Amino acid sequence: MKFFLFLWVCSAVNGTCLTPAITNLQPFNSHYECVHAGYLDALQMVQSMGKEEVEKSRLFVAFNCRPETII
Image (tube, rainbow, N blue to C red; front, side):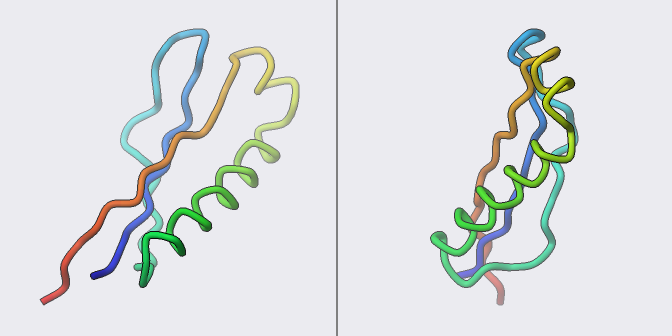
């Protein structure tokens, strides 16, 4: 089973997340590998948005690893 990573940039001020999700098209071989990549990607996204923007809109990154079967 392969897993795919989906990330959303969300605002705690507005209570919303940007859609559609940002999708990492690289399949992961395990849930662990996907979650590990999710945390690394989320950190990079927060850093690239910058402290001022993150503070202003109380931004955070949510992610999910979804299993997909490949036939």
